[in-house]
Image (cartoon, rainbow, N blue to C red; front, side):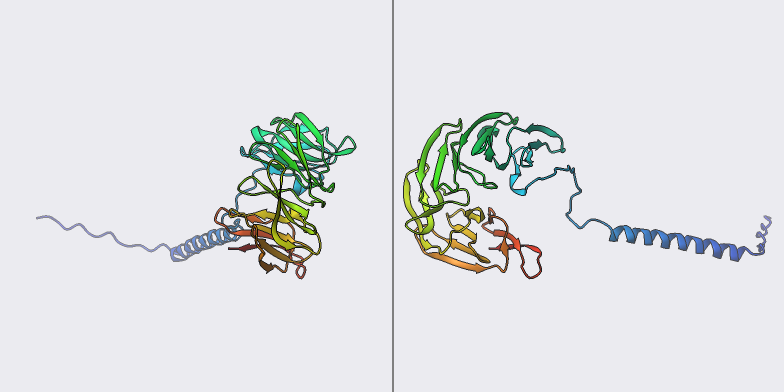
Length: 301
């Protein structure tokens, strides 16, 4: 007959409930501390969608209008005397130092760069190759901060205060000049057929059309201005609508070719940049709110 195995007797260690309570309290405090630390880290997290800063370089005197981004992601910008190209990792790949008071830069064909401003005591347009080496320059009354316009065939058109448009080939050969009878404070805008829209006089300040061969084609629209509009704050949409900001007021205007003013939009902003037309047709514009003195972005569908 099997004998029953006696159950183990339960003994109580003096003070053990307090030890267990202290251990549980310590675990709870640790968990609370972990939750608190996680909450602080969560509150300090970057806003959703904000990428980390990839690189930063100090560039004394850099002007916003000097910067352009190439198709390969190389940023080209600089001060009034030095133009520099930085690769995607922030490494300077070349410098151009023989161009004092250059006021603008834009990418041309085959990786070339066109710059406009003072050089050798006169206003000129300068061409550099993709490695920042000097190629050619030509005298042209360009305005600081206003880049040339590069046509699809590589030809370059400049505007300025001499009342003329000047065209040069991609190799720097002068092609044509056309008198527009008014100083143009902005780069010519290119339409879908290759023609150019610029500020001219027919007979008063208005928008005029010049063919890519330099032949005048008449007024763009029937609108005339009491004061000269600032074409550095203008853009062309896919349907050849010209959007003009500024013009002495806080307005955005739209013009169609051959027609009257389409619409005027009160922005309550002092326009600070050229309008940008997205591939979907949304129009964006930045400006300064005179009431709050803050810069804002306005989007219009």
